[in-house]
Amino acid sequence: MTMLELSSAYVSRVGGRKRNEDACGYWTSDSGCCWVVSDGAGGHGGGDIAARLVVKTVLERFAANPVVLGETVVALLQSAQEVVMDSRALEPRAADMHATCVLLLIDRQKGVAVWGHAGDSRAYLFRASKLVFQTRDHSLVQSMIDAGYGNADMIRSHPQRSFLTSAIGNAGELLVSVAEEPVELDAGDTFLLCSDGWWESVDEAMMQQDLESAASMDAWLESMAGRVEALGKDKHDNYTGLAVQVREQDPDVTILFGEPASSS
Image (tube, rainbow, N blue to C red):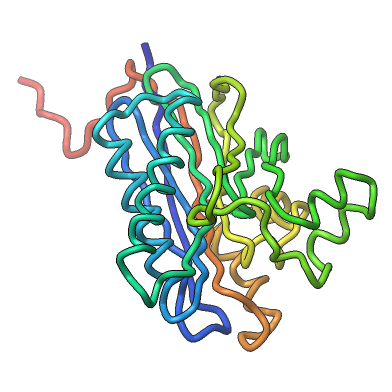
């Protein structure tokens, strides 16, 4: 059985804010792998704390049991909820902290992926450089659009676009969305996980256009980050993008470097 080869890259920058309240990270192995992006909020540094707690919790819990299933995604998000809620009770300056979360799990041996999220941080899947899937935000504006009170253009312009209907750290039951079943991956499949500071400035057509011309995941992210920065640093939020590309490793190919041995 061939094993998927995975290429990862990330960009996370402060933008026009005083501090970066986004966090991201990943953990990989020869079997299960995990990538996560979180966007924190809450004032007095609470957003920093929340986002970092979410990323740390998700990665540590997954590394302890790297099983790639939808149930795992739910359990990881719920674990992050419990940790953030416990920290809110113990840290007065972070009593209002909360965070979004989007995560991706890939089984390198089975060649499948699952993902899930809470809030308005997003996951995108591009196949043959064409967008084939994106998550739906847990937000007031998305709910309005779904109910027929507006169109998709509102998602980036409505004055209440940052009002979330689900976030880690909010009291009550945590609303999460998870891929219904593992998705079989093809070589060339590319994922983007990002915070709202990223996708609000880079629409899906731009993402696809930049991917088609990019020589690497780093180049793709830098091209999109340039679009964010072009808006002016005094006008935009923290922005984070984490890219993952799938390549199939051929176990029958051996590459040797150096001079060939002389024949006798």
